[in-house]
Image (cartoon, rainbow, N blue to C red; front, side):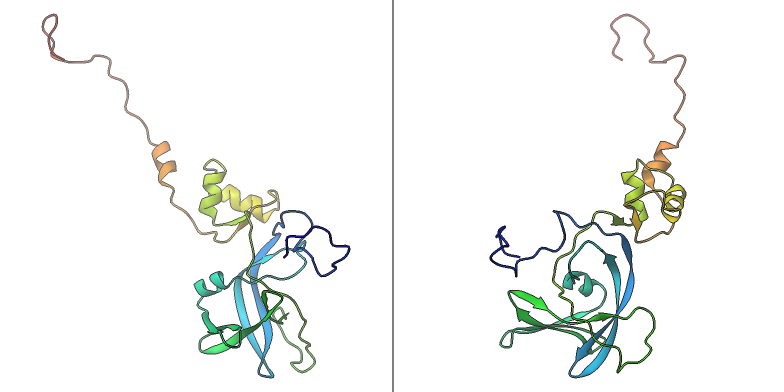
Length: 200
């Protein structure tokens, strides 16, 4: 993540993805296996974005704090970690101005803990996407389209780039106001005017 464009003489410089932006194509929950003090620790991480064009996996401590993780910090050893329910699940080390740790996405099942190797992957505090939002946000973005139609388009793959975090029913005040029937115009305006130049 250095500001140098010439990579011929320095092969260590690499970007997260080809081009400027990396779009997320999936959204869900994964289980990670990490090695802490020679023991494998498993942790579920929610609201994970699947970005196949990215060159590495990225981790956001800010989102992890919202999911109930606790942050630990050792300034002398330059170690940063995350714990959940009193158990340390992530321990990072400071390398090349990045906090990195090794983890493996094990999916939903484990066959053998000893034979399940830990895959080295670089993770950093960097992630951005514009396609993952709640259904009420997409309802407003699409001009107050019916939420049922939005769910149907997403389920059938008819709308690329739309990913829903929450799909529950919404109550849009603007839609209720727009569907109200206005009062009819009065045929005669009664202003109690009896002669010219009366105060209205």
